[in-house]
Amino acid sequence: MIVGAHCRDILRSALGQRSGERTTEDIDFGLALAGWGTYNELAQRLEPAGDTGIRYRVANVPTDLMPFGKVENPAGTVTPPARRDQISVWGFTEVFRASRPLPLPSAGTIRVPTIAGYATLKLAAWLDRSAYGQYKDAADIATVLYWYSELPDVDAFLYDTEDGQDILAQEESDYPVAAARVLGQDIAAIIGSTRLSELVARWPGSREDSLFAEMAVSNVPGWPRSPERRRQFMQGLRRGLSSDAEG
Image 1: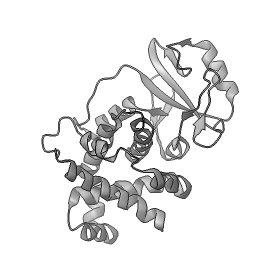
Image 2: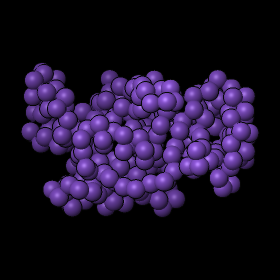
Image 3: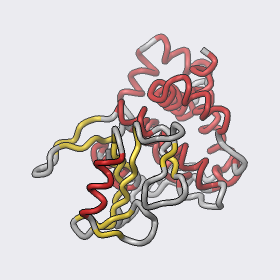
Image 4: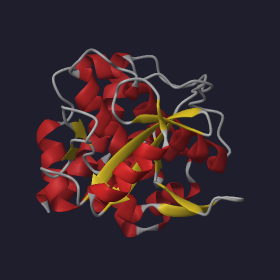
């Protein structure tokens, strides 16, 4: 399953969006594994790139190979053989289950997270990295919020269904906030009750003000600069998460 920046770029291209465009050279893959044997065999065939214990050169491209699945211990964390410390793969299994197949021209099929699945991993990344003063995931979270406010399926749900109309009424017809709430509900549906409880208990962490300050979206002139308006979007998303958690 492709994750990270290239996942964002695939989704952006599929949506016909210019928002959220950034350059990146490395690739991140999540590898669903039943055991360490396959991972070890693959790692032995590849040239390490740096000393992270998970980055290798694949077709001369730096590639992070992030194992998850039955190798997690405890759930949501793995310790690859070439590392001494754990890495977080929280939500990978749930996002993988909801992901979509993408056939490649000459290399089989990979899985791509849905937009809500990508957002799930970005929320987890924010919690992990913001604790160390790294805030880049805030821009990706903001980009997904913008995408959801532009999705025809979200528009149809909010205006043409009873549940959607209830959300619009509860959000006082504030469409971007209502769309953010739908995103929260879609994330909750992907990760299930156990992971959802874990996320709600932690989100948004101790750097909440930094989250709003860093929620910029490239190539969207009308995206709000006001941290308070961005806070409203995130409050809508949290209501979407919490409504499912409470149910």
